[in-house]
Image (tube, rainbow, N blue to C red; front, side, top):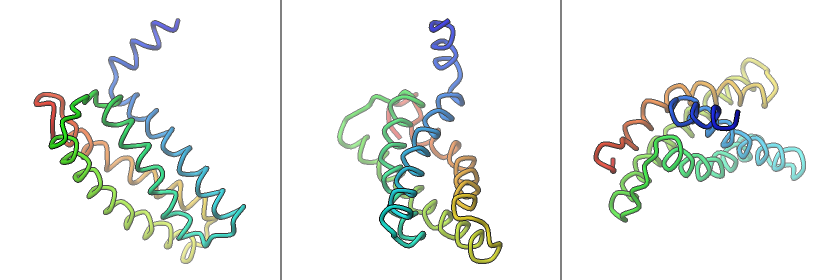
Length: 140
C-alpha cells in the first residue's frame, strides 16, 4: 500500500504540488492564528508575517520535492529564489487585497477570507512555479 501511494506521488506532480501547498498552508495558518489570536497582532500584519513563513516552507518543498529540482549551484538557486520571491511578492499584494476585500467589504471572517485568497494564489502559482523549477535544464 505504501509503495502504491509512493508511486502516485512520483507519477503525479499535481498531487505533490497540492501536498506541498497543504503543508505550506499549515505553516501559514498556524502562524496567522498564533499571531492574531494569541499575540493580538492586527490581522493584516499577522497575515503578512505568516505569508513570509509559509514562503520559505513552500519554496523548499516546491523546488526539491514537487518539481524535483535538485540544482543547488549558487547561480541557479539564486535565480530561482529571486523569481519565486517576485511571484510571492506579487502574491503578497494579491493576498492582502483579497483578504481586505473579504474582511472589510464582504464582512467575512478573516480565516474565510484567507482561505479564498490562498486558493486563488495556489491556482495561479502552479503554472509559474512549474516554469521556475523546470527540470530539463536543471535551472530556471
